Length: 126
Image 1 (tube, rainbow, N blue to C red):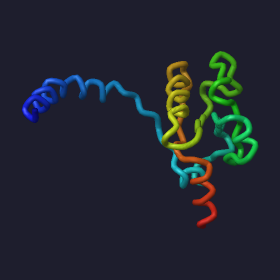
Image 2: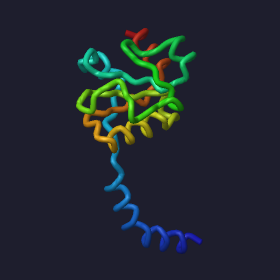
Image 3: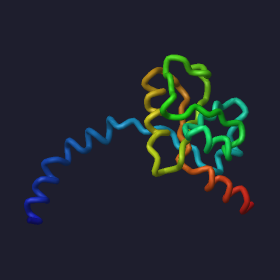
């Protein structure tokens, strides 16, 4: 069985390397970056449901729930810095929306794959 898996892996390795090269990853914004970047000019897009956003959100964030995104009528410009976030690293919506924005010509897109609670905890610890 091990030999079979090894042979399969060796045959698949070139395809996996090509897939890895073609996979466009988005820049990641870390919690520490939120205070170091000029967030005043960044459009911070919160993809969570409105009730979660209304409860707590990152400073300066704008709420457009994931299921309400209209990529043809966005409130920011293609050359503006945009940071997208949702519920954290286990939620793939930020990456999906970020990649779609890049595909539509938005140049400066990053994702914040941390939760608002993680940001609050980091802020409270300092």
